[in-house]
Length: 347
Image 1 (tube, rainbow, N blue to C red):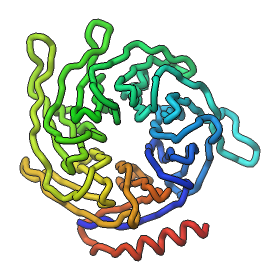
Image 2: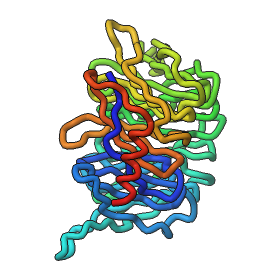
Image 3: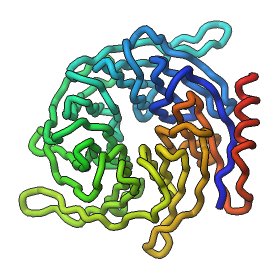
Image 4: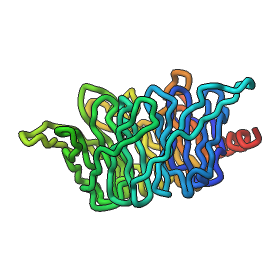
């Protein structure tokens, strides 16, 4: 298996922190305070959202499931909600408009994520808290229904299970916490200990057959955790099922679990690593160096491009790179990516 460059687009003037894909649209957020919307079928930039709305970097973007609603979390402590305008111009232009600004966090918002049914928006912050917001159907009104403050340090990332009302948060305190609803309130159901550094990101397995989550850390490892049981006090028991083969040489910033069971990771060393599970054992299926040249890679996501599963990454160089992977191609060198980048910039 090899990882091949498909497209490389210089969409931002500064670091790309976050990307999210829905219905063929890719949204990205950057230190340059802008949010870009791209059509993945044509690799065409559709819209650039107003970079005066937020006063500081856009740290996280997330599409609401089954809608055109987009949430963006910023270092200015606020969250913006955007939606596509109902009426398009006669020239078939594509625009999104600001729908709401959500305030509440006392420090930088590090991550935002929608629940699988779109009813809840979770956010986390440098203020050590996780907030859960309830949204109306139109996405215009937001009520904070729970403030979760069990983490002892900066909370880096939140992610919902793709089918269940379960939330995971990753923190500078080296832990992952699992949250779920109890008697109309949200509480910590489990604390996952095992990393020896900041946990930057986690992602749930997409199957409904079992409950597992992968995580990545400053300690250069990627781990897989499995839910064992719920005890009599409604607490969950989890175990670290596997530490994936050691490949990364520096902090791992982002992991993504695909629908077909592959885990992809990236980070400070600029590598993309794809892991696959074979007979219960995890092995490296493919890896690639210098994926954004000498720059760090901040985020990786499995995406769908015209029914094909691919990877997208965002780096400190301001590029968003799209990657294909296969088992019948030989690996290309970094110079190939350079030529693709130059071609993309000229367009």
